[in-house]
Image (cartoon, rainbow, N blue to C red; front, side, top):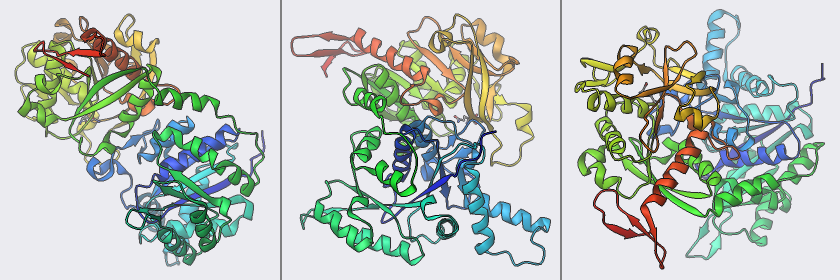
Length: 562
Ligand code: GLN
């Protein structure tokens, strides 16, 4: 057996304001260290009391990112997996809810008998155990990068900060590293970059006993030498440890920019890591094709949470990966499914080359989605349905092709005469909401000769799920007879995982979430082929002219230039 390596720990905190891109900074550093030949893993500590984000409204929290093992996690885990190209597990997302739940159930069992159970040391010990656990499954992890959610100064993140402070004390100096991400705003009226918020934020960290080694400064303008020197002096770090984090054209460029600031050199030096020189050439190629595409398509996302783009984070990223592989810029047109009922699918989809109907919960906007699918099916516009999107496609087909006018999903109509989407028996027994859906990776067998088969080039796949409802097997025969192809099934053939249509340029929908497995270097095949189909569809509708291109409308035959 190989001996266990001495794992090093990097802690990333955030200051001044939220949404500075701590997750992307952590993932970018992870990539740089990985490209130096180190074995890296990433972890997020979330200070809220929910056990996981699965029970939160997407408007509160954004997308719930599901891992292979079924863990429902923060969307930053999606960035981690995409940047360092690994499949993480439940250990990679720790919440206050999980920590308290574990400590309280131990207390009830009597494990602390005689003691008063307190934040320090019991809660902080549990947090430290979970940080160490991130490296536990793999003896060969060189570096764990732990991102602490929230902003320094929040009451709820204090136990996490105390735990990482203790870890620094308990380990050798070159074993832990603290990176603080702050904001250096440019004040227009003064014509100056302001360093004071960073100074205050670092002061706050130092008051609780953490002295950051590196400051990553988010800024819209390049940091001047004077600003860097000032931050260094007031925050007690060498000037080279003040790293500029400029707004980037694409998030995938951030590792390249960090490398330009010598961030990886600095980390390797502080942690005395033995590793090779950096080779980022494969990543530069990916970024280059994302930034300089030859073609263009417009794809609509027709969903319920379109006002909060974070609810569809992985879908947006999947389109960026798929666009890269098709040398195509994918512009997203956001359409609220409720709009379809008021404005009409024909008008809303007139200028798009494909439509994605994503996952979702709750009845609002459902008829708009079903109407959208009808329009796409009848007008032969490329369509990709995901989870609820597949359920809507099935309901639409049952209603308008099989003639089951009252068909619906049991989720939205408990009395429906035709519940073509219904609850499986094991779901009927479920009474608790948290962690009780069909979650995580499941195998799926693909029908030879289907569109899905052509797309995947494989008959056995594994994809991630997050849903309660399934296609009702009582309706299978009727649906198939009328032309719905059930091209992906669970290995026992009891669950329908993919449906598709023939005699349509591209009509396919999955019960699983393909967007959770797309990576910059490996676009998900469903997204890759969807963008390809959209491009083909667009090309069939554009006519080259001397001035450029003329786009022929779907319905009216009217023409507009693009
Ligand atoms: N609400 C549906 C279900 O629970 C779909 C879920 C989803 O789209 N993720 O089955």
